[in-house]
Length: 450
Image (cartoon, rainbow, N blue to C red):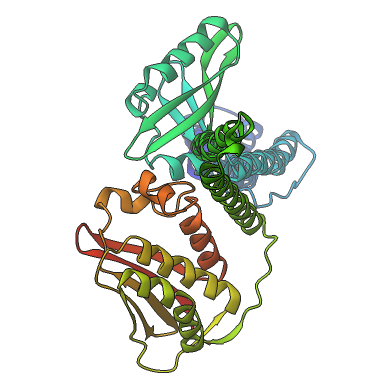
């Protein structure tokens, strides 16, 4: 900067000095002494002028160089270097203007960064997946929830490449055609099934569609709960209808003259009583299950001697095994203590062992327990009919029965394993089913050690 500004000035002054010396030599013998003195003084004046010009240009070029450096730093994003205004002349005015640019830009950039941070925080905190596309349908922005539900690296891909569901793509097209927000539901399989409620709004500016904002709400669980509710209502209706139909039929028969036949009247009344008891068990189980799910059941968690509980349950169920000719085995090898509610633990074991006895024609029902680290695993194994492999994942669902007809015949409500599953979970345990058709079933659950 200094050389570019100073050298032309210096060169022009030297040129004038040389020209003056040349004129002095040429006209030395021609002009008078006064002219000669003037010619002699001219180079000295020019030299003096060159000196002050050098000083001035050096000062100006230094200030210009500082301004150039500041401008370069501003362009690189370094806005913290100050620039001192050294005068109130034209250069000083330029310095003052440039000095004001950096702080102003810094404020603007910080404001933009804050807004960008707020936008990012809002998008990240949203419970819904958010995608933004351009007018060609290319994804330009996603939030954290989108990447959790779907996959990373969606930016830059076409919306039709990521979502192949025609219902969803038609929604986007409908929103663009109507220039308004539209919504609807669609399901993807990638690889698991997810059902979304989509809200799509076109981005409009200057009467042009720039793209779309897509908000996706995962309603898979809601759909599952809705299906479960419908199944539950259907199952309860069916479970209630069967005994009520039986009670009504036999009651009408008795009223139509069946009371006169003492032999059959007693049988009919016995059937009515059995079905009434079945209804009572069903209602009791429904209330128990509902109270557990609502957290209304209290658990008295304390140290429990597992051997005492197993012996108590076996004493209760021994008459049933004796009647069926089954062997009831207790293979607990040592004293073990668990943290559990004793009454609830007894309820779990009675349910599991009673089920094993019901579905075992011959052989045995065996109870085992083994400590593994800080947990104790308790198992009930039978030599009964077994359970098909495809049915194992559904065990523990309300009203689910592997053999519905036989289960009802044996007095089951279809809620026993669902209650067991909730009780085990509420006490910090897990429930696992293993079975081989024709060879028997093992049910295992674990509880924390005392």
